[in-house]
Length: 317
Length: 317
Picture (spheres, rainbow over the protein chains, first blue to last red):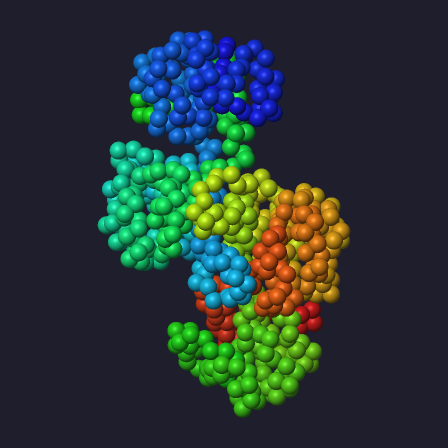
């Protein structure tokens, strides 16, 4: 059973894998371009995603399973994969802890005005006259009530917030007080103190958030995007803060990343730019490889029905 | 029933009180020095604290009850109060929500390196190489496991942290996994990722945190003081960060407030200064006056046994 990694995990993980699976032949190739020779014999490919093309799938004649150690599958060559009936699993679920913590961190940064506090400190200014608020009793609307959105809502409930969620069906999801669909959530916008977007980029979500939505929001509301940059046109965001339609915008995702240094978002007072940080954590690879190990155990025992996070290659998620 | 306020609440509260208690005669005097004439007839004094002296108690011949709309009672003239058997109530408990939110805000600011992110943004730098961490699985030690400490622990548990508390008896308190006393908590210091102090200033707590304690802590640990500034000598804190005994220190309280502008804390990289913000919230006065209203109702109905937050004037809390 030949397993190739198109990235280099830390030595402790490499050793851990070799100890746990002495029967497997692991090759750690650092990048896909190093894999040309190994591809035809590889039964399993472990990738961080975004490196596989149709040609690789074609060449990987023995390939049975692709483990993607991230959640983003937008660039996967699903058609080629589907044709050869290759299994795909990903690391779905491991993002929820860091992303929810990051989101609550931004919400508290805003509520407690910690950004202004830091500026005051730099200037040696002691001033308690800051427009601080509480999460307690405030309303949160989450666009994208999946595993991550539900974890954000769970923490928000711990802070005694009201929570509303948006998913494709409007079906109830744990930790939300009420649910909407992308067609119906507009009615909740006038109530939301925090609007958090965790949506993937799909035909349904691209540029779905428009000026008409910001028009409906409280002028004190906070918009946080940790999903995908193309949820909303950049001009819509700039207009929303310049015309004070909304209290503040936190953006962790952008249409072009890294955000170009001349981009107006950097200097805009009403917009905070964070460099796609929400899912970054030291726990990332340990958690992803934990899933891989569980799946590899099931796979080795011919119990692929026990594998976690199997992707529907037709739907792409 | 004459009620004097030594501060001026907002008009909505004034109207609300007059509507709810038409039989009471309220005087809103802005400060204690305006109260000289009214004092002898005042049955109830409502104060934000720190303004009453022995002389005022002496002069207030009809005084039966003092409502303090804060939690700090250090400057109350308890001996004079005790002699005249005057009831004292305070606003204990209303601090727990804002203070716990503020504390979690600082913890997340540290874990997600949001201070560094803000600096990067000012400089237009996109860099994801930040030493971010998670609250998940980290250990929190709270010095002062009262209402506020327990609320901090409750939120910490929502983040899946381990929680240990310190109180005078070591008796279990909700939301803590384990408890210590001021004599025994030292053994937990090597395990704590976050050490939060919410202790009042008493003979037992003054300068109780010493170099020997910082010596035992992780060099990555974070110390947050939202209690009282005299818990630890300033020189001990400066030495702890300068010698990298500890990862970071957040101070919201100081021996002298406002912190003097020439104070070394302002410029010290390893110390973040916040201007005694933790309990500030727009909800402060509404919550404090809610307690006052409940107590005034009980008092008016001669059911003082139903009053909340009655202070033991012997102990002073």
